[in-house]
Image 1 (cartoon, rainbow, N blue to C red):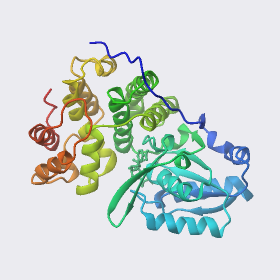
Image 2: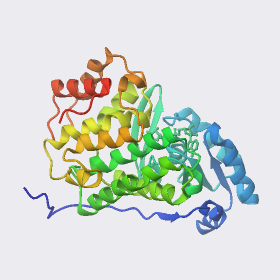
Image 3: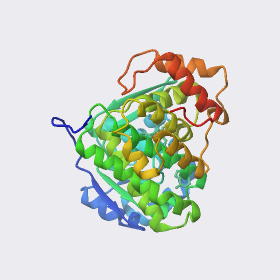
Image 4: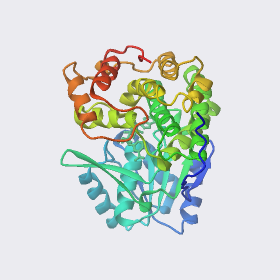
Length: 357
Ligand code: NAD
């Protein structure tokens, strides 16, 4: 059956994107280009030194530095950062870091409409979307709004060189998950499919070189290119089973974000390949083999990725609870989502077995 789409909707955001080793040193020009003069620089505590260096580089254009960005974007931290932004009269935000820091910048922009420049240091891809996930009273909610979309992204390969290899691998698989689910998204379009395929190709080509030499700037640059494409596609189309499972495991069992994506992806992919083998054929085209789920499982294993949810702290008894939560409300997925099938999928992912299909 042909899956060529004759009718579709598409969206692309007006984002200024610059790539290049050392491009972060052009930050002052980018702030001026936005018509701004007083940037608030954001980071997590471990990346505070980098944020301070950036502020020193900017001289008078750095109004302040806030280094308390945290996982899952707690609203209390956002409020603290907004108070800081007001007190230093900031007119724009610079997020230096991964999805957590980008999330803080987006949360402030959502409330203030301050323009944002993101300098990503992981492959999460949040910088390329107008989606914000934030937590309050232990509950994570998601909002989408054009104000959330960062205006400028500076992809500097020198900054991802410090990403430890284990985080590099899980972050890459986290990015690739966006592309895999975009291939069969209900609202996919020809452009989202092209972005997804090219994003996967970039990671497949660059990751073995990064693992061999994490300092390889060309390979690191190609992984950032992949992250941009995979993040962009996440902002354009809806996700399905894989993201639902990861949100359930992260939200209700506190499993780590990128690692959970890394473990679940081959299983979700295998599950859906039964329904849409032709849409997932690019995966085997890129990673080899004849079975997309197995191809990605082997690729993940070759990179030393975590393969079992039990190694991430999920208890055997929680497998059924997670399956129950992930199947409670119906949602769109190419292969119908049934409780026994999700039990089986999660059990294989818990044990670290290769995917069934
Ligand atoms: P992260 O931002 O939480 O970073 C993890 C840790 O790695 C932090 O301590 C950070 O300081 C450190 N780190 C980051 N880059 C580093 C580097 N180059 N060298 C050394 N250490 C570095 O992790 P993440 O996986 O990038 O982001 C996860 C968060 O992003 C989740 O909350 C997720 O929900 C969110 N996210 C949101 C979207 C979206 O579109 N809204 C998309 C993807 C992810």
